[in-house]
Amino acid sequence: MDEPLAQEILDILYRDTGTHRAYKDALADWILDSQPHGSPLDGIAIIQFLAQHQPDILSRLKINTQVKEEIERVLDAIGHK
Image 1 (cartoon, rainbow, N blue to C red):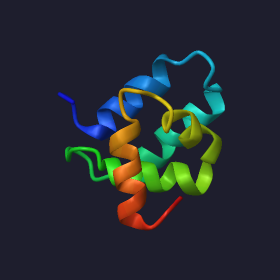
Image 2 (cartoon, rainbow, N blue to C red; image 1 turned 30 degrees about the vertical axis):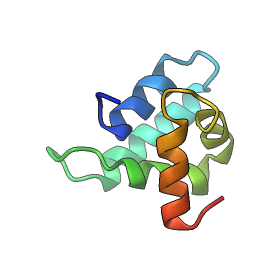
Image 3 (cartoon, rainbow, N blue to C red; image 1 turned 30 degrees about the horizontal axis):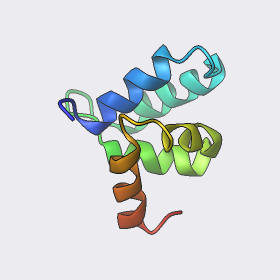
């Protein structure tokens, strides 16, 4: 994968017309509120947020061929299934 996991996840979610705007807005708000300005986004933190607050979105990402292997590795590492 050429892009960092966080960027890849955001690209997939924001291109997906099936992802409700409210979910996209909630994720954007969380990023603005919790991620350090000017620092690269933390893919693990995004996955943890999705697992906790938007599990249906995470489930859709887990079957996306672009990111599913990396997401599974992160979920295994944080002990989440």
